[in-house]
Length: 413
Image (cartoon, rainbow, N blue to C red; front, side, top):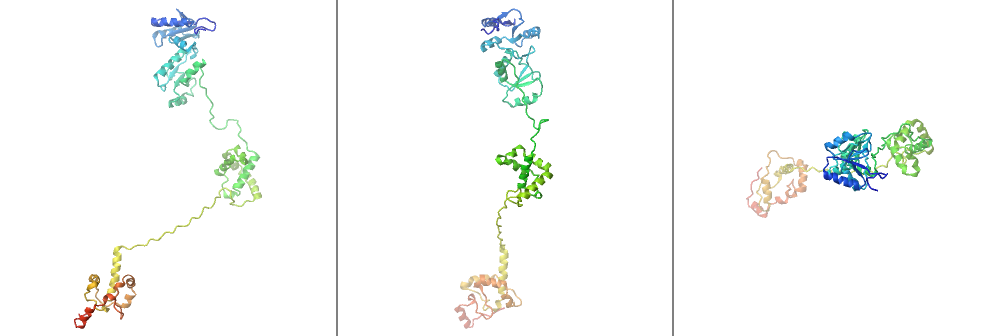
């Protein structure tokens, strides 16, 4: 059956805007006739008025011939004929409401120019007005893959008679030959609906709860029966078949049930504890954990204070000074040391010999410096009392010969 014929086989009537170019009018007449339609010289009561959108003549025709009494008279762009030919069917005027085109706004989120133009043509071919502003439009078409689409939905979803739709919505409506807006779905805001009863606690539930508390906190004085963790641990057992009853309530409900009925439930718990007689601190009770291992204490080594260099030198000088006080008892102490003992002579040349009264030998022997010199400076021992003089104080045989010949030097104090 030809496209431009109705169900009764009658030709569909068309009126062409008179100021269209002659070649366009001739082409339209030829196509309409070929597809079974008929071009009229006057505006038909039922049929299509082919106009050029955006012209003054189109506006005049709409003002003159738009009427609610003629709902089957439609204004379409002259490209409508070619669109029907390509589609292979008569495109229905679905975007019409109460005899007037539905205003639609193509949002800027649809950035492709060609896509916007094609979408606009589709809307006009099906009776809609794609040039409405965002405020006056009944439908706002936007790209659902952009963030602005979600903002538009939140902004306008509460306004009656205004809809936010995807650009694909136009194609779906044309395929269904009907306008169907995206439905609203109920989103539960939370909480219990008025009149709706929650899961009631049974005596069996209370029995399970009391047995749980009796096993975990048998003695109330230890505390913890109203804490959160006790009931959270209870609900964590829901995977165990033995604790399948736990899932009937949330851990908050179990806690509130005990908290609001503590005086009554404590008596039931006490009865259970008297029967089982668990020892306080038994393994598995709430709040008791394994004692941590005792770590060995680390001992710190005491740091030995190392005296500075100047203090060591002063101590050495004091020790040497005490030994020098014993010099009156040594033989030939003032003689100039020569030969292999030149080092000792150089040392003694730099030591000042104190003058004054003789020092008590007993105090020198008890001196700590004397004991220290015995350990560290044995090569520099001095003669004490009638003991044999140290090795370094013995004179050579040549010096003894000089002494025998009367060349002995006078001893000075």
